[in-house]
Length: 326
Image (cartoon, rainbow, N blue to C red; front, side, top):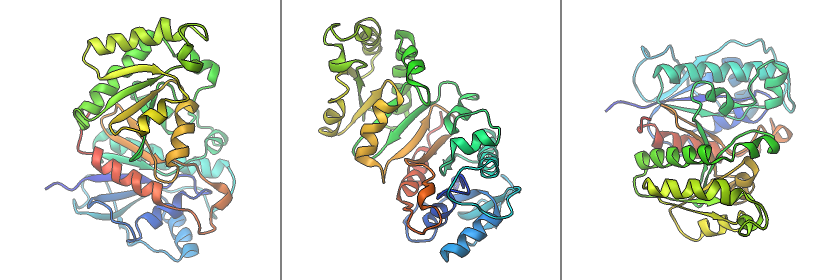
């Protein structure tokens, strides 16, 4: 049996990324058997390990010619960092985290790895380093423009029509054409990985899902026509439901997947329910990408209190999806 290869990036060195990566692979957690390749810096890992009293036995990874055995490997990426400055954004940390991620994406695009797990980055650090992308998903979208940001937990699952956009810009994306593409792509992806398992619940845009046009017209002109066309094409989908109750409906019955129309509409409810165990997953690419459902947590970086649980769940989900090619 071929051992699956999963890339793991360290994230922002000034945040909790390096320490939760070390903790996740410490042996305390039951992880699937795979070849885990950390894309990061040996210097950062060694300094973090000394501070936490944790050490990983990492073998060097030199691409697909490396041994095809399970275990932990390191793709050592040189940075200009001479000491790790934790607790705040910086250009140096932004450059390092971007290099880790970029090289891991290149490996995934070549097919050298089947999945990618990304520790949290700081968008401000990326900006200070001169990176022109707002985050992981936006970088991936240049290669895979149909990529969808979704969030996964045992109790609730949600996908987003638009990602990191100002609200005024996000509203411009709510058109029948874009919605129908979104619905059909989600249907194809989930049928491939979880056939017949999910029904989609579409959140409305306006209060009370527009109240039959009294509180906004988008439901009538854009959202309902897209839902009806998706239904005609065989998608198990319904709505639009009032956005203040659609998540309650999803929680009451298994197999419900909420389709949200903009970032905070979906993420506020999701994080209230699954902040510690939820996983950010990017769908619609030839490889899966997952990430913890939290940020860099600069305020607790280096204090030894950061929980690796969301990263552990991200690793498990990446493994589960990695056998499903897009």
